[in-house]
Image (cartoon, rainbow, N blue to C red; front, side, top):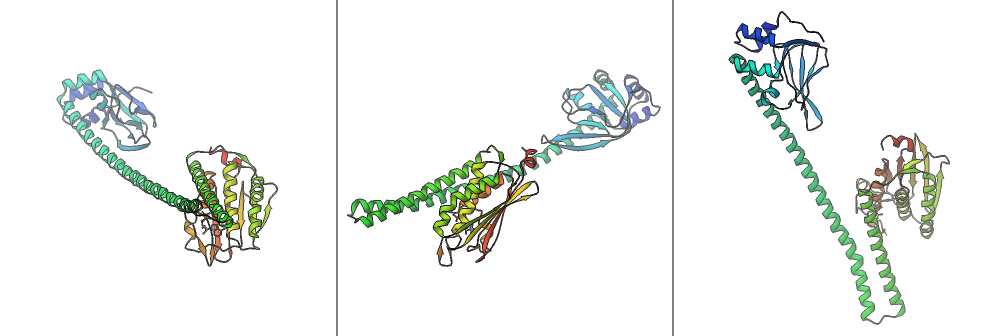
Length: 396
Ligand code: ADP
């Protein structure tokens, strides 16, 4: 940093403060100090309490302000003949913006006390100051109004999203209440029948079996809802997970169901799959669900094939069935909560439509993807892609 007096300083000061008598311009140079700074130097820092007033004699500076705690906005650029730093001194307040040199610059620096003396004595400088300060205040007002408008827009969007979520939550609750009421009412009917009418053994067995089935349905619905809530609300602890073992366990668990339906389960799992950062219980639940669907929608004698391959750093898993397939118009909705197709052709399929919603939520929680390919009458293939343990580590 070096200290010099520029020959042009007087002329520049007269430009900055029109009407200033030459002796006052000289005085200003005398009480100040001319300094040079390289480009990039910060002269005023937003929110800092600083005590210097600057007249830019040469070069360019940029005035910036932080908006909404994040975005840095350029308010303007100043050049020779402009001044800055007066607002904080006049108001005795922290800087409202940051000033940074864009090029090597030369400034006349005047300390707060000398600056105040000068203002008291020089009417032309006071006038220039009043004009500049009021102009800047107006600019600040405009900026504040623009920010308010921006915030109002953001608030409106957030409110709309909240209203939509509230609506979805109410619909969800209503659907649950309906889904609970149906099996409960049926169970009550059978119980009342058993209580008030003499039933023979077969009829009684029948009634009890129906009640038991309905209770099962309610328990499974409640479990699904609790699981869905848990997946949504709690971030599970992820550990390196062996996907091959998980898949085999899921297949083993679903084997009795497959046998009961006359469906054959086959696996083709790569023996050296990379470990995946995952939550075992959730992943197994998702895999069981895909298997459950594949079996449910398969014809007797059909086959379900589970394959798992290495895909880049991760794993790709496919569940392929030869079942009824999915109609094109249903495809965009099958992952929605409570989307369920009860009847395909003459076949009836039980279910509440939460299975795939749960599955998708689990896969998304693992930063994976799930896709489906299907043709009515030709079967469906659900493909899950999960990234490897190493690839995920950076994100967590
Ligand atoms: P649910 O099986 O209880 O109906 P899901 O969320 O698991 O609920 O599935 C939603 C819908 O997606 C099913 O009703 C069915 O129409 C379709 N679907 C899912 N998996 C298959 C499959 N493997 N084959 C044919 N349709 C399927």
